[in-house]
Image (cartoon, rainbow, N blue to C red; front, side, top):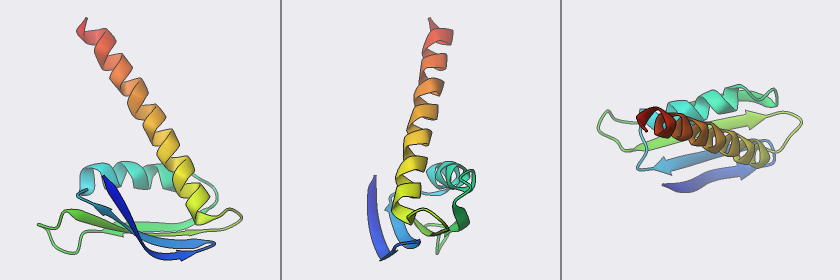
Length: 91
């Protein structure tokens, strides 16, 4: 996965997740929405066959980059827990 920043400001970032569609984008958006510092977050795919999710993230009280990194860490942890649960169940 590759992340390309389109716009960077203290409380506003726009970025593209290259090669990612709704599957991962929805997971990331859900993590971002759960952060009280998030004022607005949305993503779109410009075309149904597009493979790049475009995000807009606006925050208050915390930098947008910090909020994004924190959300990615929480998502990584949750997916690790899910992997462990599946591994246990399949033994």
